[in-house]
Length: 311
Image (cartoon, rainbow, N blue to C red):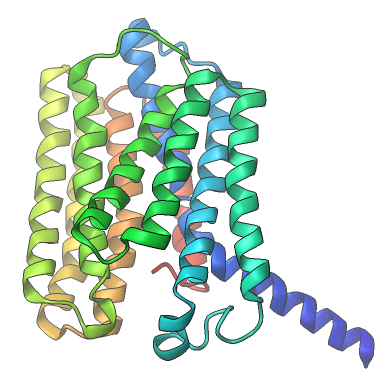
């Protein structure tokens, strides 16, 4: 009996930490890095995309560590609020102690910087530290403020920039920097909408988010025209980005009509996972092979989202 109880306790603890980390969301982080690496590779070396694979893998690990740190420290900072609004979460339910959650989150931030220093390059270290600072500022000081929404969006854009450091230097095209900038704006509006999730959202926040999804789609299409991308790759990218618009706006329409915590939460989750489709659509403009690999992360995230919370 004691062995079974110990096994159950271990499973509960593992599940609790998986919830803290928002396991499905972790799989949305590496695609940003892939996107950044492809943008940097094209900008500095041309269509050959000569990007060090070991750096891309290491940067993907860094991205996952940073994302996990952000969600863990977010729950630590929200102990009082979650005790009322989400008492089932790991910290308010006493499955994970506040001290353990804080230590775990800080440990992930430190680990990310160490990996960048040991396995990548100085540029990666700088961007990783910037991301760690933005994550900490958002979780502990800026959440719920206008500046906080911007910082959250910027941190996602910097995740793409993190992938760009795989090259370690070079002259990047200003045009390609439009991609992380647009992603930053998109995630900022999604975060703004998510902040009002428990109240059922507001019509204005949902509407603005819908507008930004259209802006994302237009950006990808225009990028494909300006590059210009080969017809087949442009077509695949177009299908993917239209799919992004259809999937996200289906949930956003439901949230706009019902405005309940459940429907707004589902819309937020759809928008977060939808970012992977955006990454895949842009990558497809450069290379279909890596786009297919990146799409696999979306499939894993979707499967895991049926078991773990996203927002």
